[in-house]
Length: 321
Image (cartoon, rainbow, N blue to C red; front, top):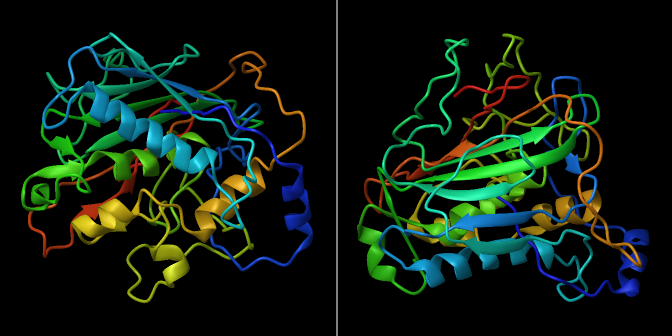
């Protein structure tokens, strides 16, 4: 659920922040304590378990797609040329077949093939914490962070390869007509959750783990985030990689390329700095928050296809569908 690439930090980008920029509607993930989510050092490395990759692609194909998804965020540039973020996503291939989800300072990208369930399973103390996921969910991202500061310490991404297959719609457009989903597009969206971004619209009624209703978030301009069910959402919201849904296979591919609001988000939160050096997470682990989205199947090419629903999966903050 994390990615990097070693990048040279251009000093000329600093001048961009003095210029007026087009309005961009991005949304930050917020803990129950009201803290904005972010990495102290935005250099997450995703350990991609490729010991037994599922069809339709192979290990190299999945690895290249995940690396490209990370590079989309790492190479964000407001002017299209000069990188303006300190985010460095790195994806490394590991020989594991799968792995656990939890706060262990290992950011994992995992295919769940034998069953679409949490590993390790929950203790059973919380009846609202089911051991298995919704069968329609294509991917779940869990983010572990400090409740009061919002500092992200760990992030894990699980991909549903039990109910669905994954491929490359650009290289193999014939997959449009199958039950296959575009892997790179979905992972690019999930990596946005990894760095602390929420969806660009809101589903009212979501609650934290203690039952408190999550207040309607504000976008970066201070505006209340509109409902995802609104029929007239502006394109600055619907064309974002962090928008909650896509309507066609082509839109799944579009998730691979950041829109202006996605770029503005990563560059505002993790703006480029001279002499930047990646450091390990700091501070003791105090609390967890979780974020993610499920990505239902696209039954037909002409149907409304992929609704990304935010799920929260930890003990401190949990959002329900």
